[in-house]
Amino acid sequence: MKHLMKTLAVFCIAATAFTACGPKSELEGFKRTKSGLHYTFAQENKGAQQVEMGDVLVVEMKMRLDDSIMFDNTGNPQRLIQVTDPMFQGDLPEGLLMLHSGDIATFAVAADSIAARFPMPPFYKEGMGMKVYYEIKLSSIVKKADVEKEQLEYEAAMEKARNEEPELIAKYIADNNITVKPTENGLYIIEKKKGKGAKVEMGKRVRVNYTGKLLNGKVFDTSVESVAQENGVYNPARKYEPLAYKVGEMSLIQGWEQAMNSLSAGSVATIIMPSELGYGTRGSQPHIAPYSPLVFELEVVSVE
Image (cartoon, rainbow, N blue to C red):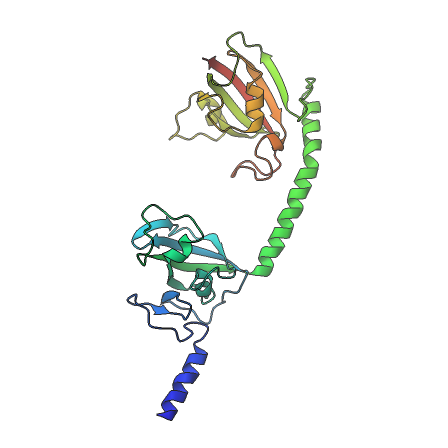
């Protein structure tokens, strides 16, 4: 008996990183750690690269609240998770640190613990013992050091783009012989055809044809079908027609709204805006990078 107890004690020590000799899981087919995390492996590659704190994981993941799916990118591995310290007992990071590249595992976390910190879907019921399941297939691991290197490179590129933006705008203005003076915040409004109809004002309904371009002339969006076809941005699932909205009720980029307020029905204008009046430091993927000045060709079709 003493020999048996000693053998079990050694087993517990060896298994600490995985089960910590926790109590038996009430979930069929699962094991449980001392902290309360439930887990099961469908595939283990213990000889492969193991996850460490700070790594970013490229995964396919199905996330569900009991049987209700909350997220699913099966078949499309993505950088979804960076491994950080657990926020509570039985949190997911404990399980992530068990993983090796190529592993397939499911982790079950107490939904009540998550709900105490994050919003939950309407079908969550407090105190019912619900679980959030993370079905994870780990495709690859981006190590912490590589993540930090990428971040430094990204920050350097963003600083370069920020510093170059004023020069790019100035060159565009000079190359296109634009003599209109900008507004105080750097917005250029070149009205090519004076509108004779109603003025664009708060609360009025407007219809606008538009084409959005980068300074290099690349079209990233348009309401005009022929322009979309000519510039390789045509989407057959889209209906091409003037953008219709009520001024003040639709969240549009700042440069657009400022320019529109100076136009009237029938106006045809070109507007040039610095990135801070467009998509700023974040850009708008996939076509608009951070710190990208924008050019819009506008035709105010109607104002009512």
